[in-house]
Length: 370
Image 1 (spheres, rainbow, N blue to C red):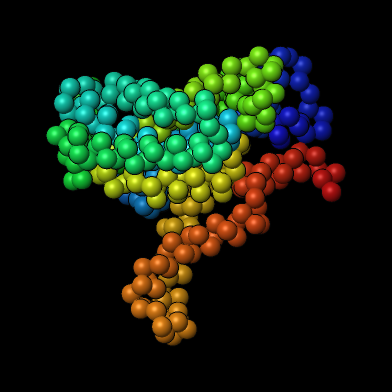
Image 2: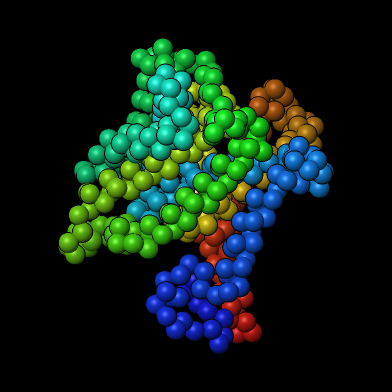
């Protein structure tokens, strides 16, 4: 939206400028500068090569977690935000990527660098299988069909595939290596995850600008009209499911190798709901929506809610004496998260990315924003 608007006096004089993601010199400097700053973060921690303590080491884990989930939510954005197909089994596809990449390395002796893309493609194929119901059903019924993946895949991982997946027990994952260099430390994994996350975010942004992406959007807006225009709706829906699952597979594989251990309990239904909430909060159908949503939910769950629980845990038992205090404490975290989501949907139903687009447009057309 804001990408189609230039500041006063800035014009496109070449076709390359018109199709560029960063259309002004300032945009290019800002995006490249932010990427370089991200790469400098591990160098400024106490565990970095220089031993300086300018930034807390906790930032590394936080940024890695945001980057991994941003990849997963970007896949969900391709499916829901751009194609209009609902999925409630995204965490299960992350589990497929995590376990398949670990099995490729542990059982087949593959390198991490080969196992990662193979696991992503394999997860995409699994997504194709669960995308087949989109030929006949849509809306609520498609959501129920996709929910089947959330129950079938964890069941397969726990029982029939237990010799390979270790069932309900955690599965140890080997440390990635490159030319004999180990990536055991999270600062080293940072330089795998962050560039890959940036690349996949840019890839998703460019997919939307292609013929395939325009077909996705037309199906989202009106699938009947798209079919009348000659678009093979079912084929493009399957492509959306494949790409969405592929992104989830990459995120799951990165999560497995970053923590060196995976557990089936990390990919249950509550994780799928959390991923969907991240997309809704960030803004479905916007390139930066997943990043905003993941960042906001991470801030909410890691900082805001934990700070609110102690005072509420002191007050609520006195206000609600008929409820067991243990039950109040157990329900506070999901209750506050749900309340924040409801408030957010009322105040900003189109997400943070929409607000960001409005801000950028207002800045570009200043002083005529009002």
